[in-house]
Image 1: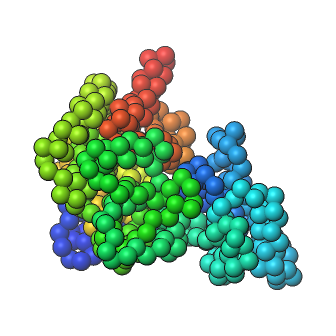
Image 2 (image 1 turned 30 degrees about the vertical axis):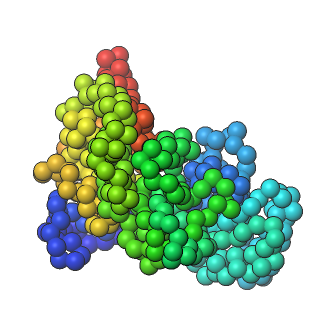
Image 3 (image 1 turned 60 degrees about the horizontal axis):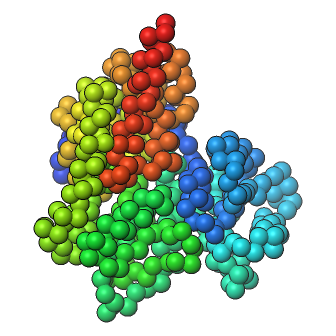
Length: 433
Ligand code: SF4
């Protein structure tokens, strides 16, 4: 898509100042579509099956992405929309019913079937939400059936998770108004990270903590006016909007990356549940110390390194905040497909002065800016990484940051390592030449 020239804005949509001012671009962009989120969602929800309703292109994308997980049980597949469907010779709903029947009879272990829309199903206006309701009536005793869109039309790949969670929130039961206060952690976290956070919340005395998505699809949390919501990821815009209608806005906080982000994130939850400072400090002090020590080992290689972020996952501002404040790196440009001013307010405040914050993309212009800036490390999608490597730049694939457990105190060192590794590799290659 070709859009207007970029403009440097001084104010956000609400007219209030925001720092730093974003450079907004609406040109050609290079990001994966929301189908990619199935890669981590199917590992998280262990009794779910994701049925993509899409084209052969969608199937190829999933096969390529899944290549790294060849030992995983197949818990996703693509129902191919072919020429007969496109020409109207076949009834898409009848065909979908037949495929669902086949999947569920062969896999009685499936407890949640997720119909995933794609660009072709959207262009054909196939209403998968309606199909899910119709099919759920038929299979109510066997499994839950929901739908979401993973289409690549105007989205980036992490928004697939947002759409999935938003569909899950729709089927979460209503909690009674007199139910005890509970904390709802929203966003797919690796099991190891979820377990660590659960232990910390328990030590803080926050008794009723639920995670969505949960490992088992039957564990849907009740949501009501006594539910406090904390987002684990910054890209859950639609999910947060739905939750806000049911239980109020998400707790404002940094996201749990690095020592600073994890402490602030836990602090927001602790404050909402009246945990006193002494208890909070006693519970978090060991983890804080371990995280600081782990990241310190990487300061030597990361400090002063100039980093350019292309827009991809929507994690970019928080990654830049972590690298700058805890490892001494110097972000030059922080690109993000979309920045939610409210959900990112605390993160944006902590970005260094003078950094360029860009929203959206005009990829050719951005490549020119990147080359002109000549950074030490480029964080970008797979499509840009190889050409930049060929030009002699060190690159980090941003999608790896979504697949890898990076949240929490115990993962702070691993997060720093993800950025240090390509710098070491590039230095070794340069030394060989
Ligand atoms: S959903 Fe759209 S962008 Fe994604 S693989 Fe299918 S056709 Fe391509």
